[in-house]
Length: 108
Image (tube, rainbow, N blue to C red; front, side, top):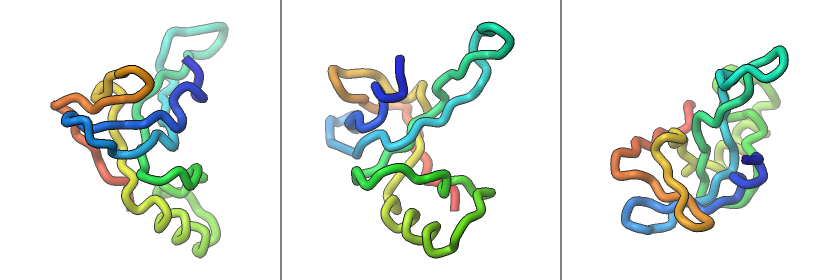
């Protein structure tokens, strides 16, 4: 699977309501060893209602950068949330949250 297969994919709730689109993916480097390094494994998806674009790393608390850009990016994605990869299932060309899903807001 490629990252481009995930970005912009619609995400729906358990009842079929549209929740947003995948705007970013968090990966952990804990997959099988390939060469000298472990491969990346998808850990969670960041979902937003808008197609405004990437969070540019500003969803990470330790990320430093211009204050104005940080405020603007956070405002544009104020309804964004994180959902674990294990809490979604592929349904056609979209992802559907499982009944046990626990979406979390982005860290402040």
